[in-house]
Length: 470
Ligand code: UDP
Ligand code: UDP
Image (cartoon, rainbow, N blue to C red):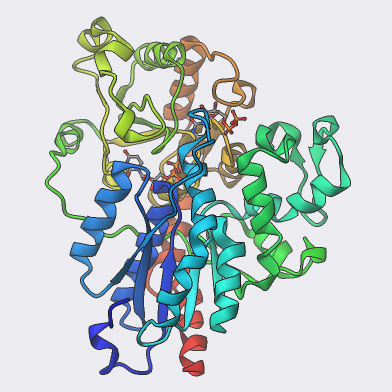
């Protein structure tokens, strides 16, 4: 690792290494944290990235971020090539998490020789176990960053207990974690029924290592998940696990990333009336069946609302070669050309959500999207597709940030008709109570993440504790 240029002038500042794992949903909050830490002047930051990245979006964002944050030191970490026995059916992001864990011991020499010496590591939940071992060898604290809701985190932390107590969790109707409100079985990700599923085994392996971490950082805020945060931190929930404190540091603030992309969709939004447009996006890695895409197009059209729809047809952006017109049909594009835009590209979601023309957000409830909607107070039509998203949808609904039609189930489970989608979009855009509640959530979110907000205080307290140790 190269020396940090300022290190001699600033000998007492803590030096933090940040290690995100694969997926934009993991990288984005880490970059926001890195930007916040490096601009605070209170610490030195090294960003570790695994190479090669899975998606083009990750490579692009890492290089743009580094070129625009010259104070952040970069350590690129070459992964051992992945296991040739894996099939093309396996999720490439999960495979990358696996190979990151397999390769992580190779990182030790670079971390041990870092100058100035590292004070702490902030590492992704999916490498909690292997990074915990390295942090112990270096005799420095490991803070785990969990890029999901506190509620889903509590399920992940409880999973080893759940699966050792119950041989077949499919027989349950709900999961009861002492001290927390029960989770209906329909919200538990289906892979959790199979201990050998790659997603389940990664969660099990890392959940077992949580107690050795110094703290669990989360992109959430007190008012949004107050019951769960309080139950864990007051020692009423997950008492057998001996968890370190949960440290809510959200919603993490976006930073400006300059690029040469033509953001024509923002100019289009400039010409739309206030709160008139439905923004539709299912994050960075979620696809829908062709027939579901057709039904969604019918729903948008019959709702009568203007729309901005970001379409994805493959999990990894580099493989996304289908054309929009083949997915939604030329006649749909022709009929709706004055009503909306459908695009297949990386968009600046933060700038879209900030735009006054946006009135509602049809979304899968990836946790970053939820926090971004919360910050802007935009009502969400929750349509969870997989992973943590149903648990997150329940939080969205409970916090008053939107509506959720539970009977739609998981993505790829069945077909939701265009008529139902259209009706729900109308409800989303016209429900004044939800709009009012969402605005209220926005105010609380901005208060938490603003200067002197609770979330910033949590980060500053960590820095102070690390500073005292230097
Ligand atoms: N995102 C974006 N443009 C896109 C797709 C996604 O800016 O075209 C951002 C989005 O704002 C969020 C992250 O990528 O910060 C996706 O994370 P999330 O947890 O919402 O969903 P995931 O992609 O992990 O399912
Ligand atoms: N899926 C997706 N993106 C993801 C994870 C899952 O689009 O990041 C879809 C995927 O097409 C898969 C379904 O959701 O068929 C369920 O995936 P998961 O990995 O949760 O379970 P599996 O099908 O592997 O048992």
